[in-house]
Length: 367
Image (tube, rainbow, N blue to C red; front, side):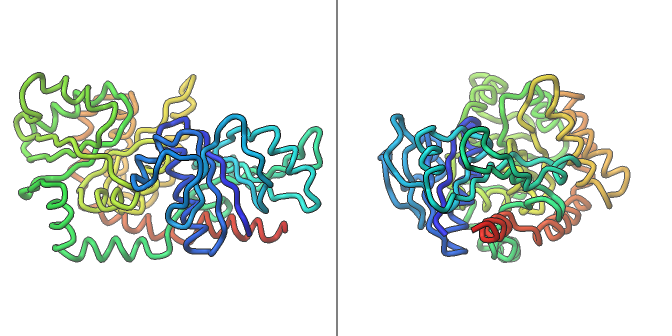
């Protein structure tokens, strides 16, 4: 089938991260023809730096188009995906309605572990005026949801990377960094007041910490913590690293011992990494995001020793504004070995429910 995927970039990298990853997987693993429409090419090019700021280009097996206004005069494809409820151009929707065989129209929703998701997954929604039906497709963590994006050999690649000391050494060498046996932490987050207390704990703790921070808005706050001097204090050293393409980001997660992630795409990739991780969920009005956070923790902490589960909950809640992140870290890191084992087991449990394959099966049944 031919696929149109529309992405309106709202969260800098989360929306386009998921859309670009899905487009590549459909094209390269399933032989589909994919056209990805992106309104913010600058954000896209951070994830795919070999691309250019042009209206149309072919990258990694995908046709990437600039979603501009006025919208180009194109015929809709067999499947139309609006990522995360972005509003399709009216002229495009009208053309969908005029086609003899209507496209399968999918609203790919945000990821959530809440129980209500399975009740509305794949629910149809007829258009109020046009002869079109939109289906709501929900990623999720259980078999009665759409699952998660996972490349067919990613976990094998991860294990090969972790089992080969040269792979890790080459990764650090490419960054120009010598980890020197320190605990490696990747830190990808939104603006977060909890950062200072976490840095204080790292600086004053007995363990040497090497913290890698991708270029971005958080860098200014990092530098404010250290003042005018070098980005090091006590046992903590921070390195600002270039924003890496999606494929290299997995290597970063695999090479580090603990990963701080944000939004949706990096959140899922941290789970495939199988390492201890801390998620900063995108803040919503009236604390709605905290319900989503708790829903995921309820699933993720199943099977963990109660003390380890308590440490995970306290760390995640503190990082999301409820508690002292520094104090929570001191307890969290004590369970590093157990969380490593749990992380690999958790990734294995999730790996059988693949979002791209599920989308493909769903759309084939409706063509």
